[in-house]
Length: 592
Image (cartoon, rainbow, N blue to C red; front, side, top):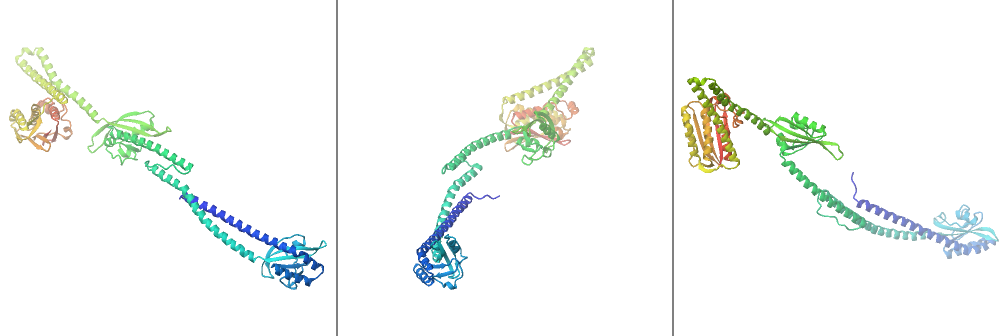
């Protein structure tokens, strides 16, 4: 619906009122003037009739019709008035302008009827005799109290009409001038009233857009000024409240976006209202594309959908845990969820707030801890059991047999050596971790080739026993900030594994190169390789890919774990490329 502007509601109404008043005044004025003129004319005709009434009565009393006609013509000529004498029966006896014999009976004329009854009633009508409008006034003629006739005076009203017409023209032109002036005044008044309101409308539109820089002018009528003050006060309060809301929204958005936990809000129909960046990453979804979608369609996890349903149904906060395979890697993730119901100001259910914590690492660490406890228990239990068993055998009488005693003591020594190696590796691993945390490991800018040569020399005897060759490719100019003893230990551990798991006559390559901002050290073999599912766990303590083979080849199961912590202490990282039966490549990345 289109609403008219205020000025087009005020101005036409004011103009119509003004024009209506002018028309009413004009009509009343012209009517009054006409009535006044006619009344004056009627009064003059009556006066003239009264002046000649006695003379006409004398002529009638003497029955002197000829003298009466002559008197009427003479008197009518002098007074420019038509004089007519009518008998009581309506017959025209004399007339100043026409021959009475040719005039019809006048007993039906209204002024004659009124005069015969003793009244004087002016009459304005068209004269068939003279063919023009005349005003008639008739008075009764009496002689000795007896009505002997009627004297009628008449005058043409053409002159009156002409005079009135001229007055009418002047009045009309005057009214037009007044109407134009009134239109201008009405326009000015309408503009004066509507302009402040239009300014307030513009100001209110600015306020609605959030522009509170310019205030309304508090001027004009008291009502308008009061309205402007009220709008300005409203704008001030709105500005303060909007700034407060924006500031609070920014703070909440900052908190919402910076939270590590995933936060999801849903409505009562389980449609997603909002989700923060952490939640989108945890669920592997686009936060903009899933808004308004059902939680089940957006995430496609029945466990999460069931948790949301329970959060909406339960009045108190709930907690739960579920798993899901999300992301391109397809790995299973574990989530700990906290859900609470949202309510509006009336206490009605408005939705639910779901907070997600990714506990995948925690669950994996728990799994690693369990595996570590089981593995370390197994690794320690095996030599201890052997030592305990053979010691009991010796005590039970095997000492009396020198051959058995020597063989059992040798086994006890071997297991004790293995147990000592495990303890030494655990202490070494713990020492590296502690020194790395306290940043007590001293790093120096040293040539890498010397460390690699020393490590190769340590492993060469074992390699020669298996008819293996260890080659080295490293430029003498390559240097890095390293701890020579620790880095040598890491390379020795990697070379020792390469020797263990490579076939006889194999070639093990040790390469070093400098790339941009890091130094790469590679130990390459063509041994049995590592399955893809085991690569992510080979650096765990006591984790063995092939337990039977590893136990046969010896070792503590801590070598790669020690390597990882040594590389981490150098602020680097280690990567593995391997395939079963195709060998492995261990790459140490050291920052320049």
